[in-house]
Each structure stands twice: as structure tokens, then as C-alpha cells.
Amino acid sequence: MATTTLLQNPTVSVGANDLTDQCTAATFTRVIEQLEKTAFGSTNRSYTAGLENSTITLTLYQSFASTETYDYLKSIVGTSTNVVIKATSAATSSTNPQFTLTGCYLESLPLITGSYGQLSTIDLSFVGGSYSVATS
Image (cartoon, rainbow, N blue to C red; front, side, top):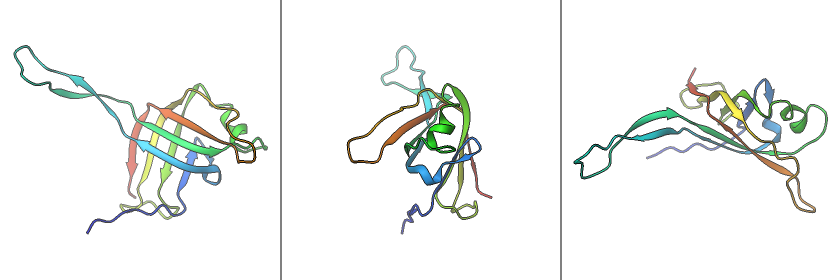
């Protein structure tokens, strides 16, 4: 029987800042770009691995309080940083791996997103960088 992971107390940090208490969703997608290597006379297309271009998308509550979401993120937009995600706050292990995107780029920072009477959230996309996973 297959085992699934229940996200209980996941952790998210961007740079040296723990944003776990502001994060409501996280998606880490590992992408290896495809390069076509189809030759003349082929009857089907064929591909090979190109450069890695992984992405982390975070949904965060937007807070303008000191040392909260905006206060930290305003200084890293347009720069490279590291993002670390774990499914639970338990120790890193083979059943709770720590996924890291090192040197990923934050291109844009939404400032205001929301509707009247609702909490404001923002979606951030960190792209590129080097993927790694730790199990101990």
C-alpha cells in the first residue's frame, strides 16, 4: 500500500528568515528543461536533458509589520536567495527530507493582493538555482 505525506507543521525559510508562520501553501517543482535531439530521417521526436530550472511557489500572508513578510522580502526582490522546505518540523530524515533551492531568483513582489474583508495573501515564485535534498 502506498504511503502519502500529511503536511503537519511544515517549515519554510527564505534566506535566513523563517516564514513558516506566514506561509499557507508551498509548491516545489523540479524542472529539467528538454532539448530536442531529433535527427534527419527520424520518425519520432527525441529529447535529452538540458539545464535545470526548478521553481518554488509560496503563498504567504502579507504583513507590513516590522520583521514580517514585506519587511524582509522588499530587500530580496531582484536578487538571489535560498529557500528551504520540509513537510514537517521534525528532524530531517528519509521520511522527512529537507528540500533546498540554493541561489534561486525572486523577480517580483506583489504589494497588495486581496479582497475587502479577507486576509491579504501574496504568491511568490523563486526560479532557477541549484536543487538539493537532505535526508539526515
